[in-house]
Length: 173
Image (cartoon, rainbow, N blue to C red; front, side, top):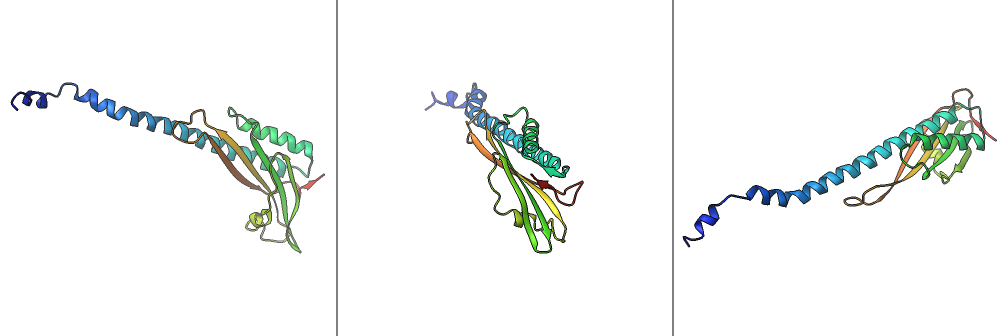
C-alpha cells in the first residue's frame, strides 16, 4: 500500500486531464451559440424584409403584379448576405367597411401561400369603419452552415401590418 501513496498525491497532469474532459463540452457550447446566433440574425433580417415589403405596398395607390415582384426582390436584397431565393411572401389588403371586415385582395405571386385568417389578423388594427391595412406574411427557409448541435433547417415566419399612406385602400390590378 505504501507504494501507491506517492502516485495518489501526484498532481502532475491534472489540469491537462481536466481540460481534456471539459473541451468537448466547450466546443459543443461554442458551436451551439454560433448556430443560434445565425438563426436569430436570419429572423431579424426576415422581420426587416417583411416590414420593408409592407411599407412599399402601403405607399402605393394601385398594386400590380410587377410592383409586387419588384418589392419581393427588395425583400430578398434586405436578407443579404443570406440567400434570398427561399423568401416567400403573401400580401393582403383588408378593409373594414359597413358590412364588416373583408379581404379586398390577396397576392401570392412571391411564392407565398393563401392567408386564410387575414380577417382575424386584421381585426385588432381595423376597429373602425373605413380602416384598411396591408398585411404581409413572409416565410424563409434558413439553412445553417453547421448542423452539429441544432437541426440544419429552420422555417422562419414574420407578419407585418401597414396602413395605406396615400389612399384609403390600396387597390390591386
